[in-house]
Image 1 (cartoon, one colour):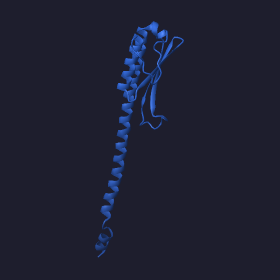
Image 2 (cartoon, helix red, strand yellow):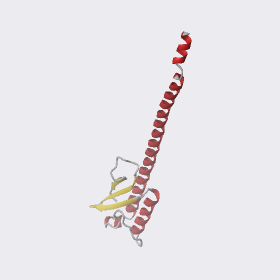
Image 3 (cartoon, rainbow, N blue to C red):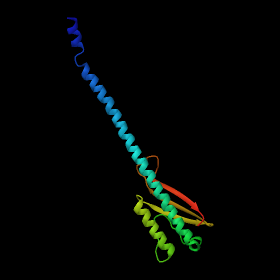
Image 4 (cartoon, rainbow, N blue to C red):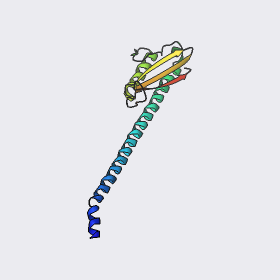
Length: 145
């Protein structure tokens, strides 16, 4: 009689253990999925930053090749501006802006030359990054052309 009452009181207890274990497993699995998502976003962001640095160095090298035009300010261009070709500086900037737009999401660049120092800024969309107010990421390079 004692064994029968004990068995009746424990009826369904195994099912509750399985449900609790399944819930804990599901929470852990969701955590792993989130971790994988963050990791993928981080590696994508790092690849974009590396691309932006390479493209920033690209225009600085072109400016060094055409140093007279660079020091004269012919390589200065603002965000959103479409440089015109016809000169070496104009062709370089048009090609550079095209590479930015092709290799970075909403990629754009700006070049300013002041007192012989060139500042190259590359900007692109990082809308997944909630820490940034405008959803853009940018890098800035400074060098003497």
